[in-house]
Length: 128
Image (tube, rainbow, N blue to C red):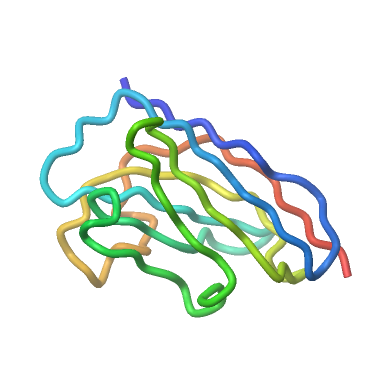
């Protein structure tokens, strides 16, 4: 079965950086396939942060709030997804989740409902 295991979350000061990792297994990459990062802060809805399509050959997508600061990448040999986060802000504080699913529609590649498989999350806390 599909397993997604996140790691790399931590507490950092504003302006700092982190790299999140997501070890993926059991995924059958068929059709237009996305791996994505999402986050959820207390009392808020889960939101899409970044997505990568077909290992990068189909492009990458970012939420406006993280463009220019976060980079999503995928190491196909290691079956690992990464999220490099720079210039972190207190508003980036959230639980970060890795997710996987088919994503034929461009408009929904950052929508949580597009994704079928989810990891358990890793906490990122940014202090001012």
